[in-house]
Image (cartoon, rainbow, N blue to C red; front, side, top):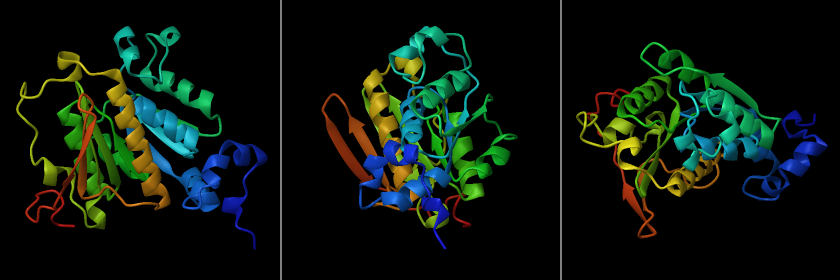
Length: 256
């Protein structure tokens, strides 16, 4: 019997031809992307390029979580939005940008701020979670919920001219976010981008790297970033790689 997963329309064959030509990915990889469900936390500086690249790549269902509205100061880096959408909900605005690139992708809008009540219900609905949030409370909430739901977390963060990226999947033996950062820093210890600034292109680079790692996790190609942390300094044009070990005493993932 034919593999219906590989039954692409003529439009899909043309749209994804550069993927299908890659021997590491091919038709089976593109089919895996079409089946995948990815949740993006935050439709801002990281979430914007991440969303657009995942939509362009043909990820079948993309969930967007954000409770904010588009402001003029966002447009320096949040490229999923546009000047004529100022004041709109970010999830709605970003969905317009994604559908303009690829109307074949399903965008699920979640106009809310994740909390202890909503995260455990929402995160298990998706295969992979991408965190592009801009505050420590949300990052730890998402990370803990991913451990509980046994979902892979692709996490990135930016500030000024620097970015960092890792993949956390303790259900597959790797460290979790709290193995790296056991507790959030005290209030006021680390400034936000709104306080310290950020070079817009830095969010683009890190969001694109998030998209690349997400595609790798979906299709199983390449080497997973689990157990490694990438640090990027834009001013020095320097990447560093740090090995991460799982904490056997981690209060969140040690029981897995």
